Image (cartoon, rainbow, N blue to C red):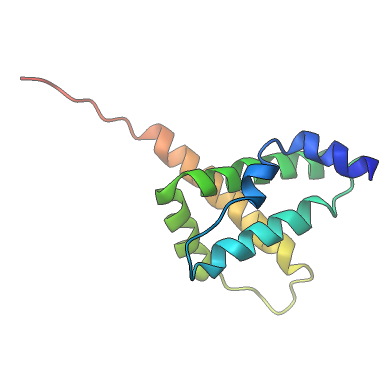
Length: 119
């Protein structure tokens, strides 16, 4: 139980994420939230790489909850993912995909700068 409290220190958006109510028929959002919840509580709190990964995952899923355009992008790309037969941990594979999509989205949206010019 004590480790769960430590994990929640690294996931400041946990309660916002698990209390999110997706629109009716949006099963993908429900599955992403369930994967998030299952994954963060199964990590080794003493492994620095896994702790950093859940921090990134927390930020990615919080962005998924808050940003409609990012949500649509994740849904589009998640449905296009092909999982190989030799994949040992499918949940980890999808978590890595979500983090990768989030990283690419952040890079793209921060690099695109619109300069408006008044005439």
